[in-house]
Image 1: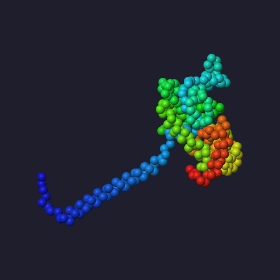
Image 2: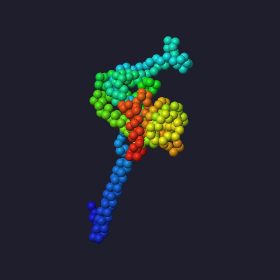
Image 3: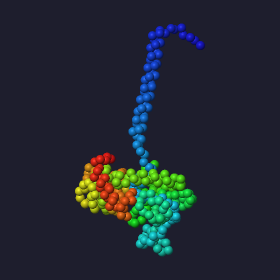
Image 4: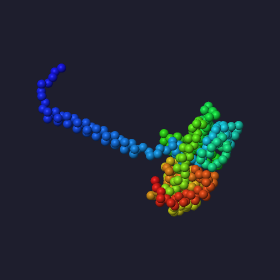
Length: 304
């Protein structure tokens, strides 16, 4: 190994050492700044309270039950003869899929029927309820329900993204039931009409009568709180399927173009099909009084 015979002055050595120390300090400061910036960005992007995976379906359900599958299959429904329907035994019929549930808990909704029949629609097959695991004694099913034409239907969320469930059905083991019920009720309470009323510009009872390009037209039957001009209003929909025809309690936000939109990402439309409001066990008139009082005190709450 060769050694250098060149002597470096002490002042130069001190300068190099000081330079190296300064470099290390600057590198450390840069690392701290980078980590701090990353932490602040992560906090800003992270939701303050992540919602349940089924939150959108919970918000839009008229009722939610937990129970066991009794049976599932198809009903043959006679219809007027038409070239578009099948002929079975010389009768024109359509097949309508269903599942029957022995209800153990009405998680949301005041109903007390021990057994309900639920229409599945074209997006869900009865075989989903007849797989081996659904027949096991420790398996339960949660069904998110929509009420239409005096029948129960499985709720479907057309606005769900890839990470969100789009069909309102969950299968649970007995050990999962209690915690799941608590989580569902927590979400349902947060999206109840009384909880959202303080954020509304107006609260009305109306009949959604027809669909238009931007959404739907609603005939205003009564204004519980706020100011609405005219007997008809236009509801702007963000997602197809968020509203259907029928009478409902609506919590509304005014738009600059004199149309209206629903609160809670389009979910603050509570149908009155059974003389009750979804997400509440209170009598209808009691809910109206509670919502009116909450909206009247809205100056003390925050609109979002």
